[in-house]
Image (cartoon, rainbow, N blue to C red; front, top):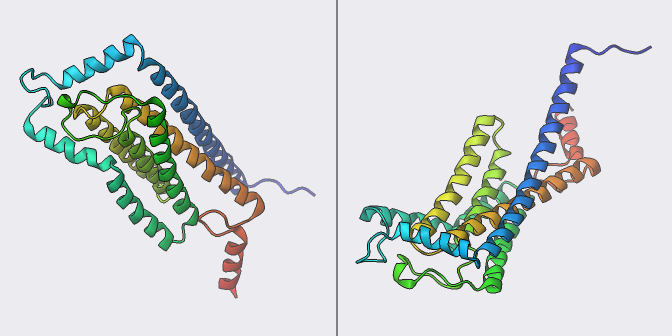
Amino acid sequence: MTQSLTLADIRSILIRVLTVARTEIAALAALFVVAAGVLTFVELADDMTEADGIAFDNHILALMRPYADDPGRPWGPWWLKEAAADLTSLGGISVLGLFALIVIVFLLSQRKWLSSLLLVVGLAGGVALSEGLKAVFERARPPAAMQAVETINASFPSGHALLSTVFYLTVAVMLTRAFPRERFKVFVLGVGILMALLVGLTRIYLGAHWATDVFAGWAVGAAWAMALWLVAYGVARWQKRRRAPLQDEPSPIEVETTIAATKV
Protein backbone atom coordinates (compact mmCIF):
# COMPACT_ATOMS: atom_id res chain seq x y z
CA MET A 1 0.00 0.00 0.00
CA THR A 2 1.50 3.28 -1.07
CA GLN A 3 1.69 6.24 1.26
CA SER A 4 0.57 9.60 -0.11
CA LEU A 5 2.88 12.55 0.07
CA THR A 6 2.15 15.06 2.76
CA LEU A 7 2.59 18.82 2.47
CA ALA A 8 5.73 18.57 4.60
CA ASP A 9 7.17 15.92 2.25
CA ILE A 10 6.49 18.10 -0.81
CA ARG A 11 8.06 21.10 0.90
CA SER A 12 11.16 19.05 1.80
CA ILE A 13 11.52 17.81 -1.79
CA LEU A 14 11.18 21.31 -3.20
CA ILE A 15 13.83 22.64 -0.80
CA ARG A 16 16.25 19.89 -1.85
CA VAL A 17 15.62 20.55 -5.56
CA LEU A 18 16.16 24.28 -5.13
CA THR A 19 19.33 23.71 -3.11
CA VAL A 20 20.80 21.42 -5.79
CA ALA A 21 19.80 23.86 -8.54
CA ARG A 22 21.43 26.80 -6.79
CA THR A 23 24.62 24.80 -6.20
CA GLU A 24 24.83 23.71 -9.83
CA ILE A 25 24.23 27.29 -11.01
CA ALA A 26 27.06 28.46 -8.74
CA ALA A 27 29.38 25.83 -10.25
CA LEU A 28 28.43 26.88 -13.79
CA ALA A 29 29.01 30.52 -12.87
CA ALA A 30 32.45 29.66 -11.49
CA LEU A 31 33.30 27.78 -14.70
CA PHE A 32 32.17 30.79 -16.71
CA VAL A 33 34.43 33.10 -14.67
CA VAL A 34 37.40 30.78 -15.21
CA ALA A 35 36.81 30.63 -18.97
CA ALA A 36 36.12 34.36 -19.26
CA GLY A 37 39.21 35.20 -17.22
CA VAL A 38 41.50 33.08 -19.37
CA LEU A 39 40.05 34.42 -22.64
CA THR A 40 40.25 38.00 -21.38
CA PHE A 41 43.88 37.56 -20.40
CA VAL A 42 44.76 36.09 -23.81
CA GLU A 43 43.05 39.00 -25.54
CA LEU A 44 44.82 41.58 -23.37
CA ALA A 45 48.18 39.89 -23.89
CA ASP A 46 47.63 40.20 -27.62
CA ASP A 47 46.35 43.81 -27.50
CA MET A 48 49.18 45.20 -25.37
CA THR A 49 51.64 44.84 -28.28
CA GLU A 50 49.30 46.29 -30.89
CA ALA A 51 48.80 49.95 -31.75
CA ASP A 52 45.30 50.20 -30.31
CA GLY A 53 46.30 48.67 -27.01
CA ILE A 54 49.39 50.86 -26.67
CA ALA A 55 47.35 53.97 -27.52
CA PHE A 56 44.74 53.04 -24.91
CA ASP A 57 47.35 52.59 -22.17
CA ASN A 58 49.07 55.85 -23.04
CA HIS A 59 45.73 57.70 -23.06
CA ILE A 60 44.81 56.43 -19.58
CA LEU A 61 48.27 57.32 -18.26
CA ALA A 62 47.98 60.83 -19.73
CA LEU A 63 44.60 61.33 -18.06
CA MET A 64 46.17 60.48 -14.71
CA ARG A 65 49.11 62.87 -15.35
CA PRO A 66 47.67 66.24 -16.48
CA TYR A 67 50.48 68.39 -15.02
CA ALA A 68 53.15 68.99 -17.67
CA ASP A 69 55.52 70.66 -15.20
CA ASP A 70 55.33 67.71 -12.79
CA PRO A 71 54.77 64.42 -14.70
CA GLY A 72 55.08 62.34 -11.55
CA ARG A 73 52.16 64.07 -9.84
CA PRO A 74 48.85 62.25 -10.34
CA TRP A 75 45.54 63.99 -10.94
CA GLY A 76 43.70 65.39 -7.91
CA PRO A 77 44.56 66.90 -4.52
CA TRP A 78 47.61 65.82 -2.52
CA TRP A 79 45.59 63.74 -0.07
CA LEU A 80 44.21 61.58 -2.88
CA LYS A 81 47.73 60.48 -3.75
CA GLU A 82 48.43 59.66 -0.10
CA ALA A 83 45.18 57.70 0.18
CA ALA A 84 45.96 55.78 -3.02
CA ALA A 85 49.44 54.93 -1.72
CA ASP A 86 47.89 53.55 1.48
CA LEU A 87 45.23 51.55 -0.36
CA THR A 88 47.62 50.09 -2.93
CA SER A 89 49.64 48.49 -0.12
CA LEU A 90 46.63 46.26 0.58
CA GLY A 91 47.66 44.31 -2.51
CA GLY A 92 51.33 44.00 -1.62
CA ILE A 93 52.79 40.59 -0.89
CA SER A 94 53.85 41.61 2.64
CA VAL A 95 50.41 42.86 3.66
CA LEU A 96 48.60 39.97 1.98
CA GLY A 97 51.03 37.53 3.56
CA LEU A 98 50.27 38.94 7.01
CA PHE A 99 46.51 38.89 6.40
CA ALA A 100 46.75 35.35 5.06
CA LEU A 101 48.71 34.18 8.12
CA ILE A 102 46.05 35.62 10.42
CA VAL A 103 43.22 33.99 8.46
CA ILE A 104 45.02 30.64 8.21
CA VAL A 105 45.74 30.52 11.95
CA PHE A 106 42.08 31.29 12.64
CA LEU A 107 40.91 28.61 10.19
CA LEU A 108 43.25 26.04 11.71
CA SER A 109 42.01 26.91 15.20
CA GLN A 110 38.49 26.16 13.93
CA ARG A 111 39.70 22.90 12.32
CA LYS A 112 38.93 24.18 8.83
CA TRP A 113 41.63 22.11 7.18
CA LEU A 114 40.49 22.34 3.58
CA SER A 115 39.88 26.09 3.67
CA SER A 116 43.34 26.60 5.16
CA LEU A 117 44.96 24.46 2.48
CA LEU A 118 43.08 26.18 -0.35
CA LEU A 119 44.09 29.63 0.90
CA VAL A 120 47.76 28.60 1.03
CA VAL A 121 47.58 27.03 -2.42
CA GLY A 122 45.69 30.05 -3.72
CA LEU A 123 48.27 32.60 -2.64
CA ALA A 124 51.26 30.42 -3.55
CA GLY A 125 49.74 29.71 -6.95
CA GLY A 126 48.93 33.40 -7.40
CA VAL A 127 52.54 34.39 -6.73
CA ALA A 128 53.77 31.70 -9.14
CA LEU A 129 51.34 32.86 -11.83
CA SER A 130 52.29 36.51 -11.35
CA GLU A 131 56.03 35.99 -11.45
CA GLY A 132 55.85 33.40 -14.21
CA LEU A 133 53.72 35.55 -16.51
CA LYS A 134 55.89 38.61 -15.84
CA ALA A 135 58.95 36.60 -16.83
CA VAL A 136 57.25 35.44 -20.03
CA PHE A 137 56.03 38.83 -21.25
CA GLU A 138 58.74 41.08 -19.74
CA ARG A 139 56.75 44.23 -20.38
CA ALA A 140 58.33 47.53 -19.35
CA ARG A 141 56.64 49.65 -16.71
CA PRO A 142 55.32 53.16 -17.43
CA PRO A 143 58.12 55.77 -17.57
CA ALA A 144 59.83 56.16 -14.21
CA ALA A 145 59.18 59.93 -14.24
CA MET A 146 55.42 59.21 -14.20
CA GLN A 147 55.48 56.70 -11.35
CA ALA A 148 54.34 57.99 -7.96
CA VAL A 149 55.59 54.84 -6.17
CA GLU A 150 58.63 52.63 -6.49
CA THR A 151 58.26 49.49 -8.57
CA ILE A 152 60.24 46.33 -9.27
CA ASN A 153 60.22 43.57 -11.91
CA ALA A 154 58.09 43.52 -15.07
CA SER A 155 54.72 45.14 -15.59
CA PHE A 156 52.37 42.58 -17.19
CA PRO A 157 50.25 41.42 -15.45
CA SER A 158 49.85 43.50 -12.29
CA GLY A 159 50.88 41.36 -9.33
CA HIS A 160 48.98 43.60 -6.90
CA ALA A 161 45.76 43.24 -8.91
CA LEU A 162 46.21 39.49 -9.35
CA LEU A 163 47.08 38.64 -5.75
CA SER A 164 44.49 40.95 -4.19
CA THR A 165 41.80 39.42 -6.40
CA VAL A 166 42.85 35.90 -5.42
CA PHE A 167 43.06 36.64 -1.70
CA TYR A 168 40.04 38.88 -1.11
CA LEU A 169 37.77 36.93 -3.44
CA THR A 170 38.79 33.58 -1.94
CA VAL A 171 38.28 34.81 1.63
CA ALA A 172 34.94 36.36 0.65
CA VAL A 173 33.74 33.08 -0.85
CA MET A 174 34.82 31.24 2.31
CA LEU A 175 32.92 33.70 4.50
CA THR A 176 29.71 33.34 2.49
CA ARG A 177 29.50 29.78 3.76
CA ALA A 178 29.33 31.12 7.32
CA PHE A 179 26.37 33.44 6.66
CA PRO A 180 22.99 31.80 5.96
CA ARG A 181 21.25 35.01 4.85
CA GLU A 182 21.55 36.12 1.27
CA ARG A 183 22.08 39.80 2.11
CA PHE A 184 25.15 38.94 4.18
CA LYS A 185 26.54 36.80 1.35
CA VAL A 186 26.06 39.68 -1.09
CA PHE A 187 27.72 42.10 1.34
CA VAL A 188 30.77 39.89 1.91
CA LEU A 189 31.25 39.21 -1.80
CA GLY A 190 30.78 42.89 -2.55
CA VAL A 191 33.49 43.85 -0.06
CA GLY A 192 35.90 41.29 -1.53
CA ILE A 193 35.34 42.55 -5.06
CA LEU A 194 35.61 46.18 -3.92
CA MET A 195 38.97 45.54 -2.24
CA ALA A 196 40.40 43.98 -5.42
CA LEU A 197 39.04 46.83 -7.55
CA LEU A 198 40.50 49.51 -5.28
CA VAL A 199 43.96 47.93 -5.31
CA GLY A 200 43.96 47.66 -9.09
CA LEU A 201 42.70 51.19 -9.67
CA THR A 202 45.34 52.65 -7.37
CA ARG A 203 48.06 50.90 -9.40
CA ILE A 204 46.83 52.73 -12.50
CA TYR A 205 46.37 56.03 -10.65
CA LEU A 206 49.87 55.94 -9.18
CA GLY A 207 51.46 55.11 -12.54
CA ALA A 208 52.82 51.79 -11.30
CA HIS A 209 51.11 49.87 -14.11
CA TRP A 210 49.52 50.32 -17.48
CA ALA A 211 45.75 49.90 -17.43
CA THR A 212 45.90 46.61 -19.39
CA ASP A 213 48.32 45.22 -16.78
CA VAL A 214 45.67 45.67 -14.10
CA PHE A 215 42.86 44.29 -16.27
CA ALA A 216 44.98 41.20 -16.94
CA GLY A 217 45.73 40.82 -13.23
CA TRP A 218 42.04 40.94 -12.38
CA ALA A 219 41.24 38.38 -15.10
CA VAL A 220 43.89 35.85 -14.00
CA GLY A 221 43.15 36.41 -10.30
CA ALA A 222 39.41 35.85 -10.72
CA ALA A 223 39.98 32.74 -12.84
CA TRP A 224 42.40 31.26 -10.30
CA ALA A 225 40.11 32.07 -7.32
CA MET A 226 37.12 30.43 -9.02
CA ALA A 227 39.22 27.41 -9.98
CA LEU A 228 40.02 26.96 -6.29
CA TRP A 229 36.31 27.24 -5.45
CA LEU A 230 35.57 24.51 -7.98
CA VAL A 231 38.14 22.29 -6.27
CA ALA A 232 36.40 22.85 -2.93
CA TYR A 233 33.05 22.17 -4.59
CA GLY A 234 34.35 18.91 -6.06
CA VAL A 235 35.74 17.80 -2.70
CA ALA A 236 32.40 18.54 -1.04
CA ARG A 237 30.57 16.44 -3.62
CA TRP A 238 33.08 13.61 -3.17
CA GLN A 239 32.60 13.77 0.59
CA LYS A 240 28.85 13.47 0.31
CA ARG A 241 29.15 10.40 -1.90
CA ARG A 242 31.86 8.65 0.15
CA ARG A 243 30.83 9.99 3.57
CA ALA A 244 34.47 10.94 4.16
CA PRO A 245 35.64 13.85 6.36
CA LEU A 246 37.69 15.67 3.73
CA GLN A 247 35.71 18.90 3.91
CA ASP A 248 35.83 21.39 6.78
CA GLU A 249 32.63 20.02 8.25
CA PRO A 250 32.51 16.62 10.02
CA SER A 251 31.52 13.62 7.93
CA PRO A 252 27.90 12.38 7.95
CA ILE A 253 29.03 9.36 9.98
CA GLU A 254 30.50 11.64 12.65
CA VAL A 255 27.32 13.70 12.74
CA GLU A 256 25.17 10.59 13.15
CA THR A 257 27.47 9.30 15.91
CA THR A 258 27.29 12.63 17.74
CA ILE A 259 23.49 12.76 17.50
CA ALA A 260 23.19 9.17 18.70
CA ALA A 261 25.52 9.90 21.65
CA THR A 262 23.42 12.87 22.73
CA LYS A 263 20.27 10.73 22.77
CA VAL A 264 21.77 8.09 25.05
